[in-house]
Image (cartoon, rainbow, N blue to C red; front, side, top):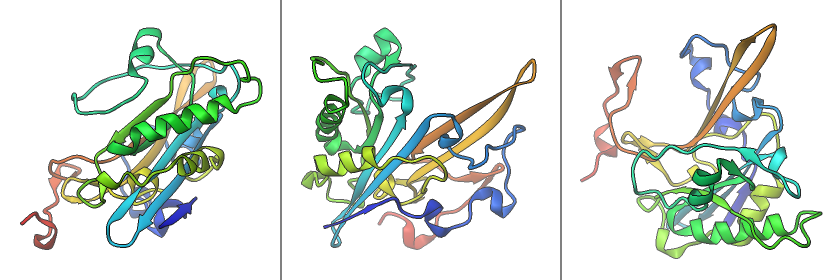
Length: 234
């Protein structure tokens, strides 16, 4: 089994803006990534073994929760009921997160949550901590990976968390996006940011990171993109 930490940004491929495709009216941040938000880092580990395993871990690590007693305001929107999101009850009730956010494959989410607890308990100043609410999201990468093998280990999760950095973020088939697909094509991890004028000369940044794994039809500026015959099911 091979684990890859910190794959090259965008997998060496050009991003949409480099191809002349720009969306929205606000300018992108310096890296057009969630890491353009001050104090947010991302770490990724890809887990690849033979022909059967294509999965991994992506960790979003805000500095504010990467310390003893840390917390951040948080919200939640549920698009459908299939997600195995851990930590959802406390997040919804209290409106805060107190750990980094980890993404992985569906059946590895629970092992990832346990590893995230380990990570938080080990933080300096948490020696007496007796409760923590790990937040782990997932998508099902079982089409391209042996999801029943549950190959993600605590070591993979801890490596993603401890290796989180700012700057450019690897996209595509990396980390938790290694084995996912969307709109009939290979998908993966994506990220973007927008710089916003807040008034009185103040500037803010909105950043997103997603693990894309869903059906539908890919459209670019309203034009559908057909899926090549060799990629279609059956």
